[in-house]
Length: 49
Length: 315
Ligand code: SF4
Ligand code: SF4
Image 1 (cartoon, rainbow over the protein chains, first blue to last red):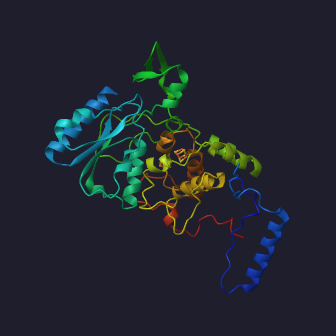
Image 2 (cartoon, each protein chain N blue to C red; image 1 turned 90 degrees about the horizontal axis):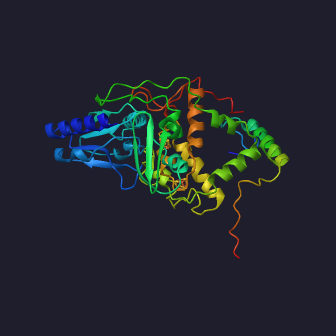
C-alpha cells in the first residue's frame, strides 16, 4: 500500500524463546531506525484557516 | 434480452403460483436510463414488472442475508458466486432458494456510455451487439463490447455456477482473458509511487460507504467503520482515514470477492476501488489456488489452515 518494505515484519516467536524475541526486537528496531520516521501513515491535524 | 425477460417472468409466475417461493427477487426498470433497480415480487400478478437487460449490474445476493422465507432469485454469473459464498457463510440456506440462473453477456458501464455522447441521455436500448443511445437532439449506436463494465469484459464465469433453472442456454465463457494486468502494474511500482497512486485514486472519496453497502459481502451488523467503542478507524475525510477504510474493507473481502463490480458501479464519484479486491483475488489464486464462490464443498482460504500454506513472509 506504499509502506516501505522493512517497516513491517512478521515473526514467529514461541513464549519459550526469549533470546529469539530479544534478537527480533533488536533487528526490527534497527531496520526501522535506519528507515527514519514514518512520513506516510501519519495524520495531520486539520489546518484551520 | 427480451427472451430473457419473458423467461424470467414465466418462471417467476410459476414459482409464485405454485407456492414454491414466497418472493422473487429480480430487476425492474429504473427511473433513469441504465439504472435498473432491485424488485421484490410476491404476487404472480406482478411479474410483468420484472425485466432483464445490460443494466442489471446490482448484485442481488445483497438482499438474501438472514432471510427466513423461500426466495426465488434472479442470478447472473457473479451473483450466483456470491450466493454460493452466502451459503458457505451460513447467511442463507440452499433449500430456501430457487435460483433463476441468467447466462450473462456483461453489464453496460453507464459512465462509458455517458462519456461517448454529449448531453443528457433519455433512452438506452440494446440488442446482442449494439447499444443505442437517444437523447435531446442526438442518437448514437455504440458497440456493446466497448461499453461493458471492466469487470465484465474480464469475466471468466459468466454462467451461474449454481442454479435451479436457467433462462437460456449457457453462453460461451471468455477465453484467454488477462484478469490482472492492472494489478501487476501497481505491484511493479516502488513504495513511493504506490503511495501516490493510492492517494490519487482515493482523493475524491467522500466516504458515503455506497461501495460497502452495495457489496453482498458486507453484512456485519455493525461495520468496523461505524464502531465507536473501540474506534478502529477515524471517521474524518483525512486521507489516512480514507485509505484505512478502503484497505480494511478490501481485506474483509479477501477470498470472498467475486469481482461483481457492484461496489465500483455504486460509487458516486467513480472510484475504481476494485483494484484492492482484485489484488487479493490474485493473491488467493496464486497462493491458495482459490477462486471465490465456485463451490459449496470447499472452505475458503481464510478459515482453513493447511501445513503447506505459504509462510515465507514470516522471519
Ligand atoms: S462509494 Fe465511492 S465515495 Fe463512497 S465510500 Fe466508496 S469509494 Fe468512497
Ligand atoms: S467487493 Fe465489490 S466486486 Fe467484490 S463482491 Fe463486493 S461489491 Fe462485488
